[in-house]
Structures are given as structure tokens and as C-alpha cells.
Length: 555
Ligand code: NOJ
Ligand code: CA
Image 1 (tube, rainbow, N blue to C red):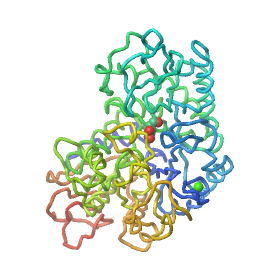
Image 2 (image 1 turned 30 degrees about the horizontal axis):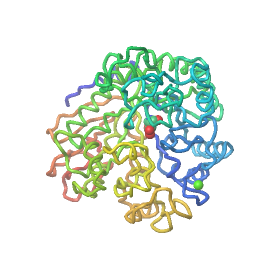
Image 3 (image 1 turned 90 degrees about the vertical axis):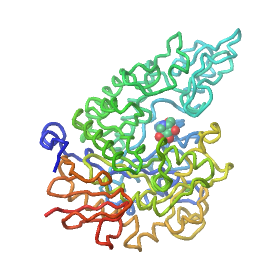
Image 4 (image 1 turned 90 degrees about the horizontal axis):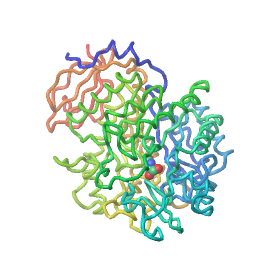
């Protein structure tokens, strides 16, 4: 066996096992999970009623994306009030009831903190607009004078991540800056009132029993908005290795998290945090440092194609991060921002574009070209989750992936909700992975609620329904359940050793002689010796078939 990872160093130097270092977290997009009152929108009582289902998966925690009051200009990431519940989703009492139900089932809760921006309906922004040029109320945001005699042109040519200018007019010659939609004005983190308000928000939810936080756009809070502004052409490449980009991943952002860390650690147990930081992989460890947020999503797995080499590279980098920062990493195959994994892996592999890009372009054709092979995608997605669940570190599962659900590609333009769709002709947007879950094979919204669903579900959702999969021992849902159950028994410690194998095969060993073997090749291979503990597909040929992962205990 060739081991490229030093077990002892990993185990005793810095990485210890506590809940959050190894937690499996189930991501709930609340508007699309379960609708309790038939208005077509998923809600908090809906989640509470489905806690037994979440419990049956065997996950350690739920991450709930924003449920705060919002006009939904960006799926709830346009927050009107960071310390309340959207009335369409419930009340604070419903929130408390949900926390009790989750905790009663031994499930922790993570909620989003959205500190980079508010919505344009937030009282602060409304006041800022009304107060006029130079008013202190404007200092909570990034207002700047426009160019031209009356300020009729934006201050510079910077672009929003959702397309178009990053500036919107205030109507009086000033403009305000927004990295995302115009309905999401960026906050000014140099302003002490802003800092104090978010301390309050963190404490507000921690006091209500929230166990952890997912920090939205964690790499965006500090900005160098000094003049002269560099032209967009010089800064359009957002990832830098040296922290010198004026808008993203500046070193001093960690001052904010060191401050929050004191708050997190003042609770017993300390509150957990995970960064959404789209930064150069070499800079991710800063966010995962125990002095900063303590954990960061490992987005490399979202970009990995279905190739043994991609997985080897991404795993090695993630493990090196864990060793170097004494923390952990969070693997994931999908989230509410990416085309679903079963779909990415069911489209043809291309040399010069990653599967995410291929899937996004496929969405622009409403899923017509290239041809999606649903069965292949599901088979690979099953093999992939078994790899992730066998790794040291934490894993996030996006709702519906446990059903092998595919992206819904043919949503008609008039139902699309995502701002990316309307504003950018290069993107159909992210609605295709946010279609409400099918719970039953029938009913107006397949058991999501008693009436319809806010995004239409396709007919093929019926065969993916939870109740259908519960009855099928070989379903993806039952594979997830078995894998999660076994994971907690098999994969303790934090060491991982690579086992030499042919290039199309990924093989690593964890403690106790347990191996994870995946055949990425197009032909079956001989099954390594040992007792098979779990396989992502039937092993009826006697070997390890293509696109299959097996966990086995070597003699
Ligand atoms: C990241 C969130 O995951 C995404 O859904 C949102 O659009 C942006 N942050 C802006 O808040
Ligand atoms: Ca509802």
C-alpha cells in the first residue's frame, strides 16, 4: 500500500474528531421541501412535520437556507430582516417548534447569515435612499457619486455577478453598489453600526438554539473602494492568490470572523460556522482556520468531473488543507446553486469544459442537447456519494440528491424565479435544482403539499418520490440510509491511505482495513478481496462493474 497521507500526523497533531469535523449535513431549501398549508410554498411547519424523514436519513444536522422576510429577488438571499421569519414560511414560534423537533430527533441546525448585503426593502436601505446624498444613513451601504455633470453615469464599469452593471442609481446623482442583484445592496463593513447589527443577529439565532451558521459570500465583506478604480478588465478574474482583489477575499475579512469567533465560543457548546468562500483553493484554509470560521465548503468537488484523477486531485488537496489548518473540510456534490450531480454526471464528459459548464449550457437548450443519460448519471452519483461519505471531514447533502433526482431542465421562462435567468442570456438560472421535492407518486404536487407547487414539477418526478423509494430496497434513498448508518460505524479516525491501483480505479483505505474502491473505467475489474459492506450497484457479474463504488473490509 502506498500511503501519501501521514496518518499519525493527521490523527494526533491537529485533527480531532468532534461532531462538526465529521458531520453529515442535509441542506433544506425551505420553499421547496414541504408545504404545510397548501399555498404552494414550502414552510417551517412543513419541515417540522418531516423531521422523522430527516431523522431516517441518519444525518447529524440540517442546514436551512434563508427563511427570513424577503421579496425573493434571489431565493431569499435578499433579506428584509435578518432576525425574523418570512410570514409565508411561518413565525418565530414555528421556528422554535422546528428547533425543538430537530433537537428532539438529535439533529443540529445551521442557518444562513447573509452579511454581504441586505435587500432593497430593508429599513436601513429605505432610509438610506430617502436620506439623500451625504446623509449618515447612506454610510451603511456603498453609495458613490456618479460620473457626468448630473451623476447620470455609474461610478465605474464594474459588473455584478448576476450580469450587468454592479451599480444602480439612487435617483439623485449617486449610485449604490451591488455584487449580486440590484435588490441586494452591499453593506459597508467599515461602518460600526453594520458590525454591531450582525453581532446581534448571530446572538439572536444562537440564543434561539441554532447550533451553527453558514456564512453567505464569506469572502466578500471587506472591499477597497478607493479611487482610482481599476477598470473591470483588470479585476474580472475574481480569484487571486495574494488577497489583492479590491472586492473579494481580502485578508482583513478575517478580523470580522475573529470577532464572531469570540461570540461563537461564548456559547456552550461553541457555535459552529462554515464559510461559503469562492476563493482560490490555496486561500480556503484561512476561512477554515479555528481562529476564523472553522470550516469552509470544498467547492472543488462540485467542479470534479467523473474521472478517477479528478477525484484523487481534489481529495488530496482537501486533506492537505485539513492538515495545514488543523481544521476540517466540507465535501459536497450539489447545492441550491449548481446543476444536480446526477445530471452533471449523466451528460457527456468533455475535455475542455467541466461538467458544471456542460450542464449549464445544456440547460440553455431546455435539456435537449447533448443527450442526458439519466441512468448513467444516477449510477455515478450513487458511486460518488459513497466516495464522499468514506472520506475524513464533513459532507453536505442537498435535498433531493438522496433520491437521485435530476435537474428540471424544461421549466418555461415565465415560471423562472432566479434573477440569473432574467438578467443573463448566458444562464438559464438555478431553478432547475430548486423544484419542490416529490414525496408521493401522486397528488397535485406529488405530496409536497395538498395543492400545487411554486415551481412546476415534471411527470417523471413521480417515479423518484420518497414513498416509492422507501418501498424499494435498491433505491438511491435506501442506499443513502445504509451508507450513512455504516459511515458512523466504519469511518472513525481521520487518516486516509491511498492504495495503489490502475489509473481508472480510485482506492483508499481508512482505519480498520476498510477500503473504498471505485471503478471509473468502462470495463468491470476484479473485485478486491474482502467482505463487501456496501456497494453502490449490484455486483452480480462477480467483479466491480463500471461506475460503481464498494466499501469492503480487507482480510
Ligand atoms: C450564495 C448563495 O448560495 C446564492 O444562492 C446567492 O445567490 C448568493 N450567495 C448571494 O447571496
Ligand atoms: Ca406553505
